Every structure is written in structure tokens, then in C-alpha cells.
Length: 369
Image: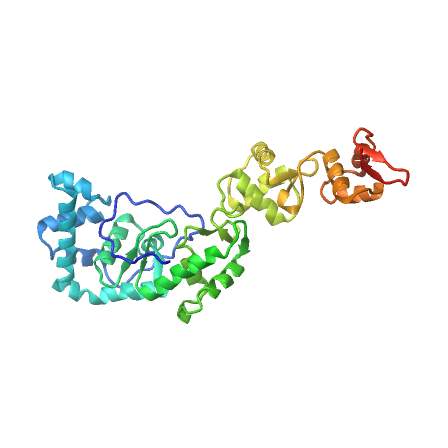
């Protein structure tokens, strides 16, 4: 179910930064009005005490730090609730002022801009796209709170904090993202085009104007539970192929992308080339050894266990093959083992002829001893 929409006037400071890897840096958009001048005119409409509270709360003064209700209360020896009341009264005073009415065109321009972005936008992406410095972002945050067309959805376990200008669209997007997540398996990974197609299936009733890749990716970035990896593959945020927390995860993506076993030195080199991450050869080798997702299939060659490779020495592989498939000729054993191990024929034969573990039958086939 979509979160309840509400106007936010009680933000805490400092702001928790969005650390998502798959959120692209938004393109900067310069609107047609001077946000600093507009904020100055709006603040001039309220009493001194309310102006001070709003200035501290939104970081509109010499400092860009946004203070909490508690911090402001301590400054003046008043309660948190009293500060909240002063803030709320100040905002209402602005909304009823002549300066606010005169600024209608500016607020309309901001609302139109948000519609072009998809009507509902993750908070950090929206603010970073409107301003290049923290003070300017604070001014736009203030304008969003003051404006009657803008509504903020608080951060939840499912979604990041976001702003919208269309309640119906916001609800449909929330519900579509929830259904999309429910339809994914815990390990499923989709190419970006496939994910967009699945998302569109959940958005059948959405305005056609929003059905483009840029908006869809922006809506996907609202979700905490759906994410993408550096190769633009999508899935549940905690899926092994999506989360990238260290060398092991980057190595997994490198080998998966190659589609075949790789030498650990090549894996380290590819991590640097694909992800601009420093990966020492020895460190990479150690990480591959420790992680069950990787299987040593030859001299320094590692494959993914999900490809059907199993851990163990060549003798273990021979034993596994004979146990699963029954008696086999020497040639057939070599063929089957080489499907999951990059080793020489002679290495397989040396193990196969070890009578402690394997038995040669009268018909020339081999079985486990």
C-alpha cells in the first residue's frame, strides 16, 4: 500500500545523505526566477521570531546547517513544541501574504518542472537538480514546504523521501513498485530493458506522458528494495548480483559478465577497468578463495558455482560424476569432468586410476570403489 502523503514541516538536521549507487547525478535545471530573492521576500512577511525559527530550521542564514526543533528550543529556553508552533504559524503567515500570492508564477514554474520529471521525484535527486550548493538547496526545500502544490512523503523501509505534485500518480507509482518487488525472486537479475518492461506492465493506468525510460528510471530510484548494479542489471536490492559492497561482489560481476572462468589476475584487472576500483591481485585471489560463489576450476581459474561447478579437488569431481551418472568409460569420465574443470586429461586419469577411490570393471567402465 502506498505511504500516506503529508506535508513535512518537522525535518531533522543534519540531513541523511542518499548513498544509493544507482542514482545518476541529475542534470542541473535553472528556473526562471531568483530563488534567493523570492525566499527573502517571503520571509519578510512574518514576525521576527518566526523568521528566525524558519531561518534556523531551513538553513537560510549565514550557515547552511538546518537545526532541529530541540536545538532552537535550547537556544531560547523554550520547548520543542513551542518552536514547532512558531514555525507552523510562520509558514501559514507566509501562505496568506501578498508576497506569496505575487509569487504564484514562480511556484507554478516549479510545479511544472516537477511534472516534467514524472510528478513524483526522490528528494535528493530533485534538490540536486535544482541547485548546485547547499544553501540554494535549502531555499528550494523551503519553497517546496511553503508551496501549496507540493507534498512530501517521508522516508520508509520501502521508499526514500520524495516529493510529488500529483497524488493519484504518486499512489499508482508506489503501488506499482510494491507489486514489481513482490514479483521478483530473491536472486533474480534482469537486464535494464527487461526491468523497464516489467515495470510498465504494473503501470498500465499511468499517464502516457510519463511512459519513457528517463521517468521510469527516476521512479525506480524511489525504491529502497529494488536497485541496480554497476552493469545496469536490476533486481532486489539485497540480491547477490545487485549489491556491491567489496572486491568479492565486483569479482562476481566481472566473472558473470565474462560468462566463462577467469584467472584471478584477470579478474583484478577487470575490476579496475570496469568499475574504477583498485583491486590488488593477491587480495582478489584471497577474496575468491573465501567466497562460496566462486569455484577453482583450473590453475588460478575461477568459475561461478551457480553455473553448476562444485568445489573440491579433481578426485572429488570424478567421484561426483560417477556417483550421479553411474559406470562410465575412461573417455566419458574425461568428457564429463572437463565440463566442470579446466584440467589436463592426464590429471583426470591419474586420479581415476587410484584404486583407493575408483574401481575398473571387467567391461572397461569405472565406478566408485
